[in-house]
Length: 161
Length: 119
Image (cartoon, rainbow over all chains, first blue to last red):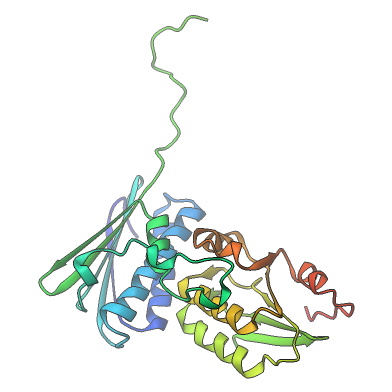
């Protein structure tokens, strides 16, 4: 059972079936923490799924059986997911800005069929960080949550009526 | 079986059964399209009512279908739940696809008189 802010670690290998299941497992773990609503849980699941897709397809060039470590910290005000792989570094050492997924909606023949992953991650997460260390990729996805509703000025000084 | 397909008149209807429309399913979806969609089908409907999650792989498979269907036939997506709709909005692909609430509305767009839907 996850306590507030306790980190759960998942270890899988790079296959589309395993990452599909892991995205659901991460959502379930965050749901069990009891802090997030359905839409937040869906945003986390999608971002993790997209990040895992990128690791399999790009960091590992589609090779199966390679290690992926996912660490999830589900605290009330902040959810952080860290993904670690031993694949190729991110091109240019930086997260893509999502501009690869722009298109002309009237030009059907040239619509992109891929490249939406980073756009979705940056739309759904509040912060995305990438670091290359010790021949490994470290990706950090952070979702900040709304503070709980506060009582309306219960402690303020007098107000004129 | 993770999807079904039916033909109603000249409308080809694909219904994914797998709740997750992601990479493990996207290949099967593309194969079903390329194996079964015929030139005689003037319209295509994809009923996503069983889908609770879609990611960029699923979106890519649907874009691939849209290109395959071409300019002279219509593709309609229906049954999108709010989670799936959000992904279309974030990618702005909601401006590209024709999206209806349900199968009945999708058929109405194609003006198919014989509405025989296996429930």
